[in-house]
Length: 293
Image 1 (cartoon, rainbow, N blue to C red):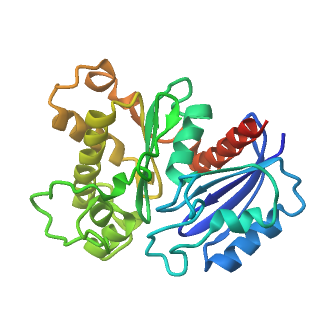
Image 2: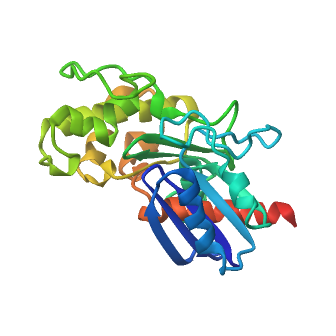
């Protein structure tokens, strides 16, 4: 099979072609610009690829309701030019194939369940912590949408007692994304996160906020695996700090060996590494093809 995959990020687009085994055979990436020139580059890439279906995992928020008049659109994003843009409609005008359409983080959760760290499990939560914070949820083998889709990057965390940073989210100020995404690290400490020493106090504050979010997901969704990716999570010291904070937050209440004694294998980086999003889009394409047959 030849399946198209698009990881449509707020910073860059990654397009690729893969097969039913999760193998990406070819890919390209380029910066996310205004919608029309960006999608024209996507269309140009796929023009000679002869794909049987295309999966799209996109930054959001998105309209994922197939019966909606704006299905396939980006909705209330602050990204200039993209608010209300019909991504799926633009692609359909170029290629008459089945389409999978979901958030980039839901796609990554699906990819990890199919070929990565959650393989063989029917539930997981996938966090991406980078320019923004997004959460994808797989529950009982299905991606969670609901009213729109999970927006766990905008939950309101308890403030760290030593943190007076006001937050950066244009909608909520000090929500999780406003306090713990990459830009908030830079705004708070005046340097990019990757320039901060591993023992800098920034990381304890970062872990404090991220662990609250993970704790909430465990209590609300009871996932079999928590996967954390994105640029900020490239700091390896964060994982043990987050695990310790989660155990402290839960205080033994969730009586599960995975948390009490096996947390190193429960809160983990993506098994697919930086290919989680693209492989997830590939999985969306495969599901779309299966539904069309």
